[in-house]
Length: 131
Image (cartoon, rainbow, N blue to C red):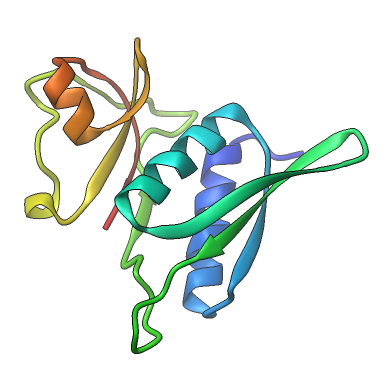
């Protein structure tokens, strides 16, 4: 049994990207799906789709590479962990890596990127960072 689905999903994406795989398979949760929507909108992954295999659901993620075949994702990192939650206020969530990176924040209005959370004036739990 996996305690932290988000950390497991980020590790699977990181490992598949380093091995230059086209597709990786993640376990489904609503939080993982919301994070993947942000990754897709920001251009870190190509696409994803939810697949039901009997009673279980999985997510197939199509990874993205540039024209030379190098990985688009340089680093993906879990920030808030089950043993140590990290919260940031609305003033602390601004730009990450001079606008080249994205921080995923769980707010009262849902899971948002750092840009959207800063525009909305919301703070919350910092889930992960990617660039």
